[in-house]
Amino acid sequence: MERSESLRIFNHMDVNVPWFSELFDANRRLFQGDGWPYGVQANRASIDAFLRWHFEQGLSARPLTYEDVFVPELLGT
Image (cartoon, rainbow, N blue to C red; front, side):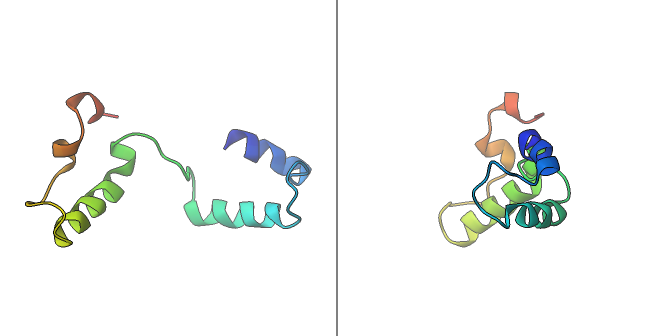
């Protein structure tokens, strides 16, 4: 992300897509910040939605929580 952001200054000349800078700017507005957040807490809403859908589609016998699927060492990340 940092590299892509720094290359914005040069209109992403190293990318062979003429409209890449425009797409990059549109994605940055859409994601408003970090488009690839790391850690359980940063992705909590997505994890909860995934686990809810997993149960609703019959893929798990009971509703799971993020505590059920991640080791305790990762819960604070």
